[in-house]
Length: 111
Image 1 (tube, rainbow, N blue to C red):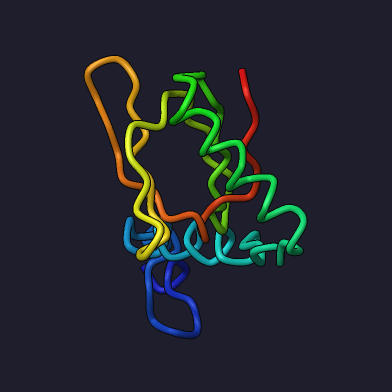
Image 2 (cartoon, rainbow, N blue to C red):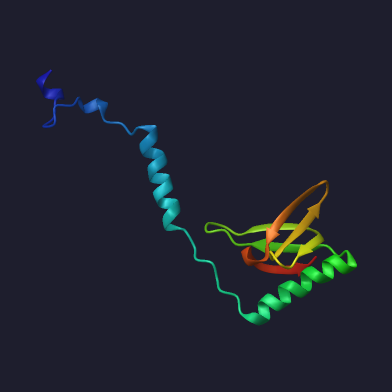
């Protein structure tokens, strides 16, 4: 029985990783992959705003690419409303819709 004990007094077979430790390791690895939001110049912002306005006026489907620290999110739909004072627009697809802040966008283009 003395052979199985190590210097710290634990059984050799009792060394295992707890689920909490596994989650912690995954979270730490994911945080190292975190990206920084790119700063868009005035020309790019104007292009995004014009494309959103075109979708609202002409009922044209657009693809919006929203920034996320880990991976960008892409949604396709129609702009149904724009609030210029809060810099938000309503994007609708199928039977769903979502209010999106213009400052969260990286790219907008017509499908």
